[in-house]
Image (tube, rainbow, N blue to C red; front, side, top):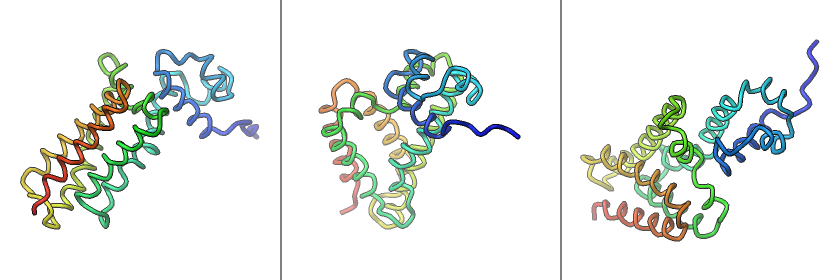
Length: 198
């Protein structure tokens, strides 16, 4: 009979995710991961395979927990249409003003894209999936708004692509100047509101 693990895999994964989020992939050493997760090197390799595989698992964890939570209001078929989009950007604007931890870390997925996507096919695939998830989420909210007569249905797809790109850019901007990123979020929210049919 196999001996039970002396650690919580999920807690270790979240701890590793947060370390990568704070430091990036390259700067986070195995020693840092040992300290943060409470696992020794052999347990990390046995559980996750390698540092790179642990990073992939951390990106999936981030997508499933952080990104999914952020986008939930956009995907809710019973929820608001255009108001869901403006609410997301207004919520981020407030977050950037009040939460310095979020501002300094930005978005783990966008950070990974900036750090690794030019030479890591796995991160490039994760980046494309992230972009597509953003587009689909904004598209769902905008399509709902169009069905309800809030906006013109013609440019829904183009606007969803625009919003996805704007959000990814804002996540880079917040690491430079949180106040400016907050103002950008408010600007985007205002532009989205201007799409409303009066």
